[in-house]
Image (cartoon, rainbow, N blue to C red; front, side):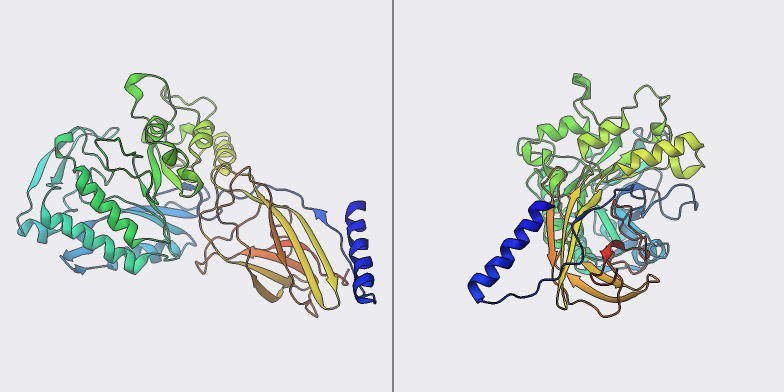
Length: 465
């Protein structure tokens, strides 16, 4: 503190030397350290994700997931029916949540998926019993001929139209690329002979890259240039989703586990390993582990340590049914809260300095990320000026951002010089969720929501103590 006062004295003396006069400098507040506090597990764009329309009050969440059949959305080579997607997005948004979705062509036990117009154009469809459906029983599946020229053109047309209409839509959290393979999961195991060629995969990736610049798109498998089964994606602007999370995530050193996520990630090269720094990582907790993965000793012997999986993958979100299918016992619930809270970002404003000169305020803050991943969206930030009762009397947008602040980075410095309002008592700030009724963004600070819901109180307006 003495150092800070000395710096201000030097500035005051400099004013005398260079101008011959002294400009009064009034300082009514000193820099202060802000107290930390846990963030809610339903902070936007992170945490556990149930299937759409979950049973209420089972576990806090800010997103919901759903599959959509391409046959529902595409009626011709250049014609589309967006109503099913619109209904899904509006329904999820009505609960203050944002949607993750995947569009599929083939799904065990479902006849929909492949648009009828493609079949009429001569698309060959392989119908067989898929045995890779555990823990569910084998089921009939319809796999299209991915080499078909009409299908390839249709996929590119669909992705372009989807991006034109929905890129940046506030109702959408993430899109998993889908379209190819069983469940849109980019494999046809055990019928690997029916899998799409690297050329077809590259066409789909290029279509997504051209169509989406704001809404994140995530891929199932990391792949580098040496991969013979998958088109290289490590250098492309996509995230990844590990759909066998905490089951086949951590490296074991065993040859038979060379398909586990972190092994595949490492083999894809450093660009893939570093992907989490710029693109989100999601996935699904393996169904065999639903719920029990949060127990002190999961009963399934293949369960991997959830905390280690989150730390090493930098996962931001994970689909899960276990915590939403039935009400968890208190011990499991509390462990889940503690574990899920560690996913994704955790933004802490560690210090604030609010000073005033005449009618001008100077606000300086330092912010760090205590989580395992950055916040990937550049949502706007507002300063708010509150009265004694916590009512917002004025707001000012500032050019601050929480986007892409990495864990372990040096504190990010924010500065603003707004005009001092006449009636306000408190200075506050918030990150604005673009979904009008979306879950509010919470900082990891004790003064979050202290005077107004959704706002972090930074301090009092100087001169009105």
